[in-house]
Image 1 (spheres, rainbow, N blue to C red):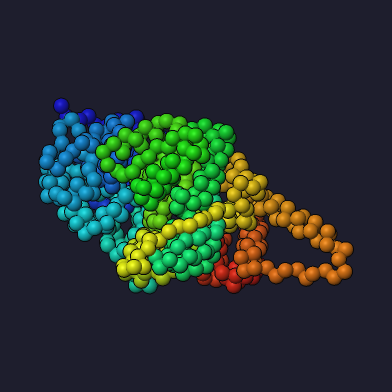
Image 2: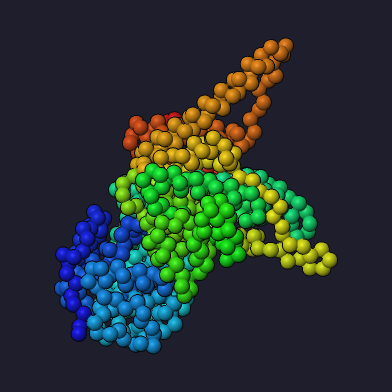
Length: 577
């Protein structure tokens, strides 16, 4: 029996961006259409509505969805079935064709890359719409890109979806249009764009607070030399990587302290109305993932779910966690992009991966809103590069071909080389050894701005930030963070004044101690945030856009990692706007 045509009336009501993009799609009627929408915005619903429209008017006879992972195949199939589109998630290359009672199949990029001729024959047999989910994966390898292009060139329609259209390499993405800019570089062009800032304004996604933790770290090099550094201070890339690795060591104090803080934040969210709120720890490898799961059990008294890879059984474990009220999930690297666990509201970024693409995919796991006022909190090491990515959360990027590699960022390969065990030879052979690490809350990043001053783990100052109400709008988050920072600074001034009054009887008052570079940078960040907040109240512009404009005018990185001179220049500039 042939598959029935889906009934449009069974579809859920479309969001404003989905309606606008659907109208644009139906108006153009072009072979290729690229839609960029932030994670959690509803790309799947949008794509299935287009499929239903095209099946209904006879433009197509079949649908093929290409997804990055096996787990997402099942997720797509289940979502499609709910609106009357039957997609075979069990299709294998050896099957050649789907059964007649399916509208089509869901496959992975790896499947297509292994046998593009199979999928080309399927595409040529019936008029087909191909939905390429997270299309940037088609550039992961030449075989995948070539396979996708060869398999789906005969398609009647191709719909490309992505939440993170940029890549860190020069591999062109098949079927995506590129336009040359004024600098001579080719940039990807989308037909519909719905960014995080748009979705945040519409209440479609959650506001994300980044809680950055610094601390003192000590480690022993392969030559037996002991080194110490404060996480977050300016250092060479090798030293930053080694301090970062030391902080993430399950045997140290940094991770247990951060996990306690993250679990305390999770409790606040649950008590505030998100009764099933869950947390995700993103680990670098399987060994540390298991160790983090043991730490979570020690902290909470409850076992954590562990997903080590996207292998057989992983999908079932993810689905079980998503449907439960279990507190914590630990995953190696990350739960795959597109995996839908809307109750995830607290994250711990405990991995060495640092590219903008990876970071955006990871943070996308926490932004899916279910009701107005929900917020997300992500705990991360106070590493300059990560702080920059957190500050640029709302920045929209395109895939750029031919762009020189930036020297101030981290390359994941370089970082992994610096973080892996050093293998020396001869009598001096010794392994890198993390010795100790302590954690303290360095700053809270929200809407491109940095709030707060250093607070030791477990202190009332830290609890003030961990205890922020769980149900807040973006404007309320900014207001409360500003108030928390002001209260923290007022308490510091009172302590300083009390100390000064106690020494007032001394014959000669000692001159005030000069501020360290770190203290001065905190003071300047505070002053800049206050000026930006004042401009926000005058103009209504979001904090992030004001910070972005200052960066455009003055140059340099986000304020969370800016130098003293750069902060001073921005303060002078914002006063003239």
